[in-house]
Length: 192
Image: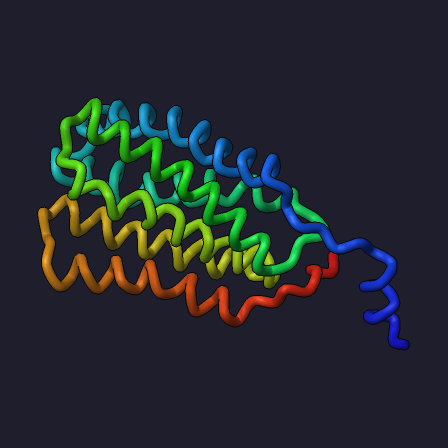
């Protein structure tokens, strides 16, 4: 028996319980509230230094993806004894919680139509799942940057009011990527 095999048998495999899953879903909900309230004043603050459109691009298309993707990934760094797939699933739950809260903020507070904001719920789940894969495979920076780039793209298109094929392409890539990564991910415990 090799060292890797014997170490796998000594460390028990952990599957997140329902309580843990609810904790990660709640983490996404809780972290999204202060972040959402941060970006409204940020655009106004930046408008003091940049023309209107530039301040909007900086706040919504640059800073929001960088900060939101980091906030969603942060709880995932403290999981041990998980499989790659369970880390990705927990990432999805954090992102889903984030997306649900953001959905209600846009629909209830900003009166954005429900159908316009519905894809955002799963968008946040998908990008957090992608980062979860990066964390599970010890490449968090690369997959964090991929998620930030996808988030930047969708927000930039939204600022310009672009819909149709460009929006659909970015959304499709964002939704399909974690499915592909999940199929590549292992159910074996991640060695730390």
